[in-house]
Amino acid sequence: MSLKYALSDTLVMTGRVMRQVVRSLDTVITVLLMPVAMLLAMNYVLGGAMDLGGIKTADYMLSGIIMICVLSGVSYTAYRLHVDVQKGIFERFHSLPVAKSSILGGHVLTSVASNAVSVVAIVLVGLLIGFRPEAGLFGWLLVILVILLFIVAMTWISVFFGLVAKSVETVGVFAYLLLGLTFTSSAFAPPDTMPAALAAFAKYQPMTPIADSMRLLLLGGPAGNSLVIALAWCFVIAAVFWLLSVKAYGRRQR
Amino acid sequence: MSEAIRVLGLRKSFKTQTVLDDVCFTVADGEVFALLGSNGAGKTTLIKILTTLLRADGGSAAVCGYDVAKQGRRVRESISLTGQSTAVDDILSGRENLIMMAKLRHLSDPKSEAERQLAQFGLTDAANKPLSAYSGGMRRRLDLAMSMIGSPQVVFLDEPTTGLDPQGRLAVWETIRAMGKSGVTVFLTTQYLEEADSLADRIAILHNGSIVAQGLAAELKRLAPPPKLVFSFLEEGDMAQASGVLAAYDVKSEALTLTVTTDGSVGQTTEILSQLEGAGIVATFAQKPPTLEEAFLTIIREGQHEPQVCVK
Image 1 (tube, rainbow over the protein chains, first blue to last red):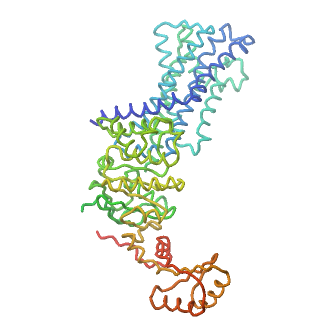
Image 2 (image 1 turned 90 degrees about the horizontal axis):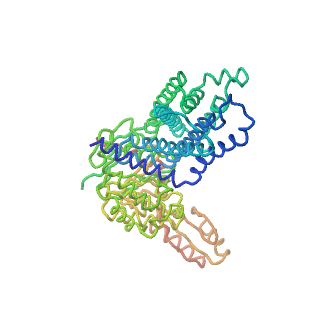
């Protein structure tokens, strides 16, 4: 019986947060239009001037654009969660006979679902401007796995920061740090072309294997080590921030 | 009469600060009970413990006969909480907010329950509007309607009128009175004595984490100083003259009125009146009963109370 409630409560909570996503126009605009605009700019403005080792700009950068899209998406996850905490909506839910797991669960499911939809949209725009993936079915399944795990990992980071943020102004800071991490990875340029110190940093930070594995798989090749390392990073990040979030969540209740 | 809430020796500290210190009281079934206290008195902490959001450090509390620490789920099935900030979802309409609550209470027909509460709280016309179109008072009413979904036995309202304009406050008062009449037990906190006085059957005053007084509003007033005499004058000259005549008393003057503190006895009142009459001063007078505020301040300031001793 409690499992039944846990499921139905989570669905109600997800429905609620989903409505918030769909009905807030600025979320849709920021999450979709910003990465699309970047994709167009990278491809048509900078693309001609860039030498990416024979790989077409769209083919090289799509994985990075997907990551940017997810990061701007999860910054809204953190924001929505933070507003719920601030407005006392969590307290109201806690005073109801609902399954506790459904409250964060609704935010997490919404985040995963809405980000997945935006990633599909980005890929479609990519196809329109000349992105030509060569991955087979198995390759695509692996790409989907990487993207989903990446979304889950970034979502738990955002849940944690949504819970601990002191104000609406600071709730999105983590996303900018992660954006910075993405721009200093291999997502938009091969690390070999960077200054030595930056190249070394790029090589060993998580965003590089995540971007590399997605790109290699989409281009039809095996992703080798980068795939394993990417999955491991995502898994570890998700696990650590899940634990931290559950702890931060519990602390709110004492 | 059975008890809706029983609190026995409740204690809670945050780090080194004691917030609740041996708090005891009971609330009868169907009663409207006001917990009165200034900011930081511990009201919200107490409500959080009673609604299972916080754990107490010591003592016990039961709501509808269920222990808040051990039977949390049972308690949550019997109560609702309306917190200090209006916990409504801005992106949803009024109706959607209510349907969501009904679903979370696992009711069999969420839609008709939502309609019932919309009608009850006079929100049917605004049901489909986004909450951005609601006034502060309407948002609070929706908030209260959400707390009535599924007919809880005890409703907790934490400072329900804080932040409302006078009109909104009156509307919320009406709503709370109607809730009280419907037979539900209402536990509300407030900083306004006027509010407690006008809504509650019984009042407890929480100060620095202890209940310093509790009883009927009238009982609490009895602890307060006696009524004052207020004289109104038509001319400054009369007032100045009266001030001289009444120099022996504790007199406060303000814009053509004098307020005289007396011991409330017939003798003293007659004496004051005849002195003014003797001096030929033109004035009207009224008796000003002590407000709950004055009662509250007297109780706290003069420490005429023993901290409530729990009967265990």
